[in-house]
Image (cartoon, rainbow, N blue to C red):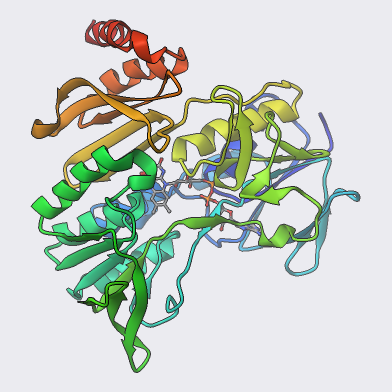
Length: 404
Ligand SMILES: Cc1cc2nc3c(=O)[nH]c(=O)nc-3n(C[C@H](O)[C@H](O)[C@H](O)COP(=O)(O)OP(=O)(O)OC[C@H]3O[C@@H](n4cnc5c(N)ncnc54)[C@H](O)[C@@H]3O)c2cc1C
């Protein structure tokens, strides 16, 4: 492949795709376009070390200046792509300039979903480094905090705010935190962990509206008409794929850019990271993952396919979250209604591993403060498509392998 590859979105997936292309010997022209003015940085620390103030902001940068220069790419930062001409193979930037391509990689990620009232003073979302820095500055003023949304992001923010000694309540319409990710049983343990740390957990009741005085938030009214007083509200109710700029392009847009199994969405057009959906042949279902590891793996896979690998992308997804002194690591998928089986440890002691099973197969494994080595070994149960009935012997073999 020669000519020009244009990558849109200069973050985890886009940067990885660019580097993978060069590593694989692509020596044509390369353009990396990102609408954030900062050089590429990592997002997981934003709701952990950056919010807690234990890392300097520079530590989240994914590459130093020398490494970025070494990529031999035109790095257009602070510039948004505003349109894609699929037939003419051109990207249009917000300023009007157009750039021709032979292949394009779309890695524009997601943007936070908003609720009516998100524009009030005192209401925050968290996606960018600037979001994290401004949220931390406000947390230092010791506000009463309400976190709306108890997914991984809301739960991580609640944990950090609570560890700063603040009064924190987390509200979510689902029955337990992280219900969508891990279901009822693990969610109940997450609720218990937050309550043990002194967070008010108001699950099973949605938010009706934000209360405000002179344009500043003063509280959150829940659907049962109870009111949570607040000086600061964090809205963490999920995110939507950043595809607005592709309206009218003719690309298949649904829940993200709908690619084929090779992560291709059109002629010379590929997508990677949070914005991409594709049918994962390993599980036989279409997925769109908002997982850091997937951004890297899919960026590499797209670079390979663009250079002719012609390989379906069939990863076992990996996700982790850190809350207080707990690390949850998870491989695979965790469908609603899946069976859950304890593999090792003791949930009462807050150190264990479980398997999830659906349609007679192991679909996921989850470690709660389990060693990374053990969880990595258990990943095999998902990768090997272990039948649910073979779980005890397969898990014992994986545990034995991890111990040696
Ligand atoms: C606070 C936080 C904590 C997280 N913690 C974890 C965690 O613990 N574990 C985990 O597995 N995952 C975590 N994630 C998810 C993980 O960070 C994402 O999966 C990963 O960043 C996805 O990378 P990406 O490159 O696909 O998208 P992004 O990182 O969103 O990057 C997309 C880039 O494209 C830019 N862009 C958008 N539109 C345009 C346009 N039109 N033109 C040009 N540029 C554009 C965006 O501004 C952005 O810079 C976390 C995410 C956040 C926000």
